[in-house]
Length: 76
Image (cartoon, rainbow, N blue to C red; front, top):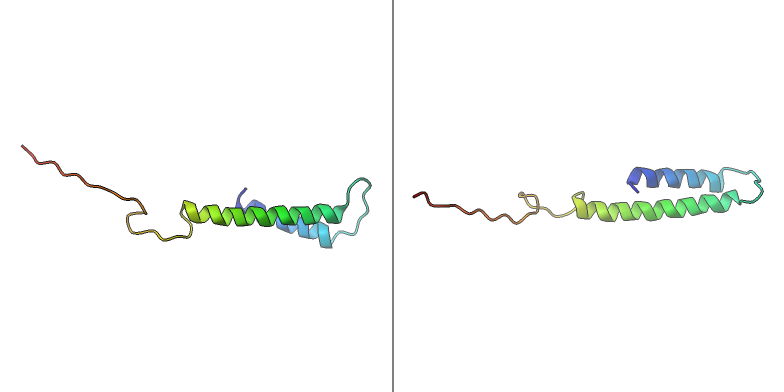
């Protein structure tokens, strides 16, 4: 789940939890909204953690974080 989906889930969950005042039989809209907010926050945190390991934030040197060995051959 990407960051945009996580933010979308947080927004929809917040609207359901705190802005909707409807009664639906069989489902509690406020609880569903809080569940969506929690899932969105967990997804956002996971996206930020994995983004840093994939090249977003992090200490990278000029070579792109790769150890490169250059082997030169003598011409005969």
